[in-house]
Length: 85
Image (cartoon, rainbow, N blue to C red; front, side, top):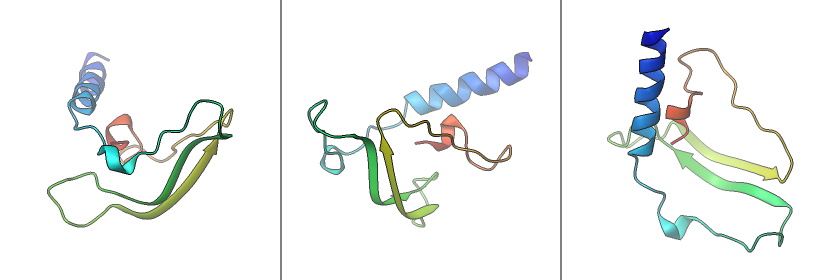
């Protein structure tokens, strides 16, 4: 259990050390002006910034306020906090 805790804390620490998203790719709306909480349009995501290829390409996602969302997959498939960079 101690080893699992150490691995989890290392993942959280590396997540907090990541660069923030570029401000020009985020649009913030006034609270209550939309029923959408999160929207991704044609999103491209990479786990490794040193690689030019993307891991997820052309992702479209719309999450409304009050919706529950889960990222599911087997262990090691990239669904942890670390992979939500």
